[in-house]
Amino acid sequence: MLSKDEIQNLDRDGYLSLGQLLSSSEVHAVNGRIEELVSREGDNAGSELFESKYIRHPKEEGADRLADLVNKGSIFDMFYTNPRVLAGITAVLGEHFKLSSLNYRAARPGQGLQKLHVDYGNAVPKGGYKVCNTIWLLDDFIENNGATRIVPGTHKSKVLPQDAMEDPNLPHPAEIKIIAPAGSVFIFNSHVWHGGTTNHTNEFRRSMHSYFCAVDQPQQLDQRQYITEETKSRIGREAQKILDVL
Image 1 (spheres, rainbow, N blue to C red):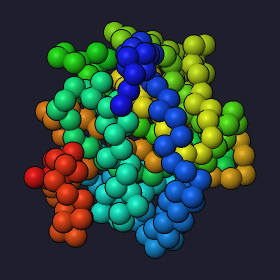
Image 2: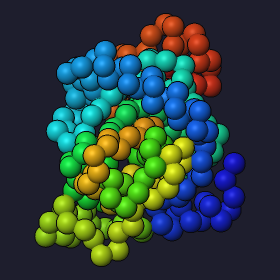
Image 3: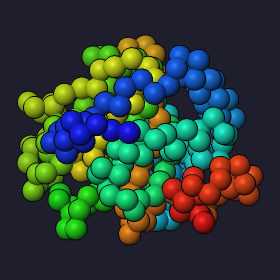
């Protein structure tokens, strides 16, 4: 599902646009379901992610979060089963991977800045890459609304951003911003330096993250612990394999 050039670009730059994989009606439907969940969960929204016994994720004050979306509606199934996404994950992690977590993040007005970081403890892990992420744009990503920034090629770096930069919160001279319309999907090797930027608008900047890891890594959210019988029976064997719940 990926061309030779796309695979080469992903390997070289550490990120790749997969194009608009969601229609405008799908974006609208997903955002509607998210609004329902945010309203229902209130202060507990995203708590599964923050309370994970395997990988603790600090609560982020500058963004709204939802977690465990695998179990919160069939509308979210496509975010970890899309063939182009899976082809990109395979190009980075190889044939043996699993979904680590499926989360929602919305940068709040005036907030959302993240320091440049990687999603793994080491710069270049031995034995190959361990983590890979996709970001699904639920709003247009524009220059000033908190678009994700990436420093191309840094997935091959031997140092981490906090060791190479005096202040990883500041812009990097080589960083690019993901600028694209709603419905677009980007895959990025999670060893590449990346982070959210400040949302300088009066609207939330919304996105979904389907985050994958190699099979020898712990999941950000233990899918076997959280999977419901309703979800397991709905999704089928191939999706169960991706979740590592067979």
